[in-house]
Image (cartoon, rainbow, N blue to C red; front, side):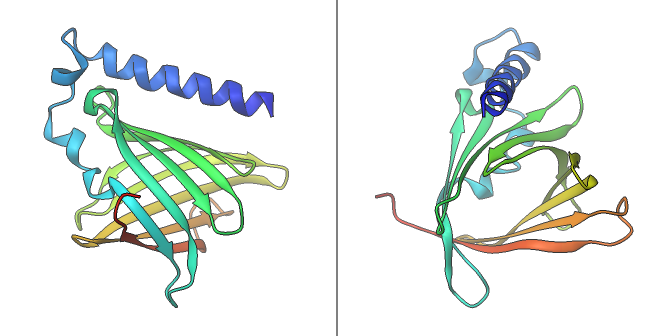
Length: 173
């Protein structure tokens, strides 16, 4: 447990350092490039369901650090919980996400594809070997976002969907 807390603190420090490192001005003016707004379609308070309409959980996504990052707070319907920090890294030309929750730690990178979907991917080590994670967020309309989490155990030759959710905007409560 303490290693997860240490990783989360390290991730927070990395996001803050990235936000400070690429501009000497204030945070409010440091993250004004269009790329910093690419993931804004995910900002909001969401009810997450499966394709049959069954409630999977809720998710709150908010801008942080003067608009330089996004903070996610997931609450699963079965009691699981997790958080992520997301930021555009101009020096690398990509988005980065650090996720910690329910025993899983992810470090994903990527960006928008040609269809306007945010696609982030990364490798993680498990007792069974290396797993490649790929998560895709797709704006379906102004009030709905689709999310698909896929894993590959053969370096991307084949993929298995392990989570598929439909985000519907909720009123702030």
